[in-house]
Length: 477
Image 1 (tube, rainbow, N blue to C red):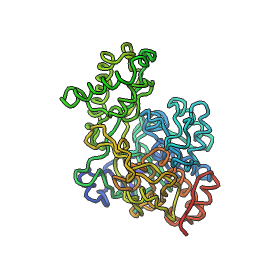
Image 2 (image 1 turned 60 degrees about the horizontal axis):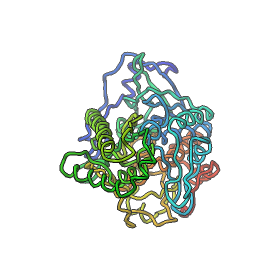
Image 3 (image 1 turned 90 degrees about the vertical axis):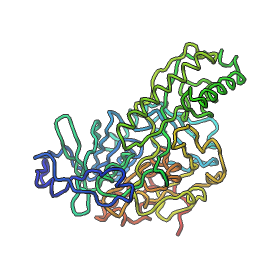
């Protein structure tokens, strides 16, 4: 293959693969139809040892780790800046504690330290899982600098539209640019798109949604306000906040007000922070349907102004409040789950099960946001049977990130293989970064050893991760 171009014959031999309909893939997936259409000439935009598709926290950590261990890495990202949900959807909170001690370090800790003034540790650390929040704008720059320092080539404004495969292996991805379609080629590809686009397009089978109706977890539109009179808010007190919340509930139940998360709304009305709590504005749709996602996002933005209109009218302190900004994108919690070599399950989460191929630890509860879009979340209920005991954590295994269909393709992030319930735990950004650092390191070691990632010496992988600051304890012998 030419170093600079892939001709049409090469492209057809490689087999650009497009995703089949969600309906077909939901029934179990499998090899998808080979596409024989394409440009007559496909220039190679970039070549690397490792191609990372997706510049959210999972992809950033994967690229950083692979590059630090000698791999030539290129990362492509569909949006104009790095950070994914963390920066573009304003989901600016990290969880690193099992409620007694910090158990997620590695890349996450490096990002906290590099973040400096942009990252704040909560005063009750480590008694809650939530340990840090951060400034989204600052972290865009921090992530960029971390990847530049590691030697990663970053190209934003690119979406992987086709997976280029041959003989059961992925050779790279096709991307659309303002100059036409190009290819990004690599020896290993890591799908950190969140939706599992690259893996699904390469023929890896996947699951979507919960059993029964196939609906995914609810989404959230984040937003920020300004010009709140906090003195007036404090003077009004919790009693008035409770009255306004009751009014919101009554109107909602009558179909005259949009859905909202009651806990988030009550907290906000009492305290009035600039950054509105994470579960306030719910939405629901199929995240793989662009038109549905467009409508859901637009409706969520409308809901924000409906909340504000009522607060201005009824809650002292909000008379002059206004929206400063919303998430560039809606916060999606669940999409495709690529079938892997190992599946993380709810019992593994709540029983804090340890794994021989551990990449690190997870501890978040089974936090399911109502797939019907009501705004309710199981986090509100805080039932012991939905979470590991305080001070305990489960292992995040390498096997959930690898698959049997395409051995030189890994996934990292919410598209890794877990049940609908377990995804509600392992989807957290901190947990996704554990996966990212793990598979990025595994990719580099696989290339160094001339083997596929599933055949990497797990002991060597874990020793390397520990050397890089990762916390991996109690691995079964």
